[in-house]
Image (cartoon, rainbow, N blue to C red; front, side, top):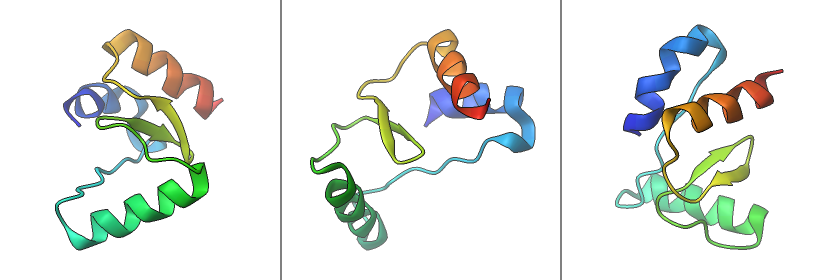
Length: 73
C-alpha cells in the first residue's frame, strides 16, 4: 500500500485504490470474488488494476507509475 501512497499524488483524482485486508470478513469476500474472476488466487502481495493482476510483487515507483499511466490513457 505504501508504494501506491507514494505515487498516487501524481495522478490526483484520476486514481482510486484500496487494500484487500484478508484478515477481515469483507477482505475475504473480496478475495473470493477476485479468485472467481481470475480463476486463481492472487499472490500476496499483488497489485490489481481493473480486475487484472498487474504485479505479484511490489514494483519500484517508476514501474508502478508507468503501469498506472498506461491504464489511464
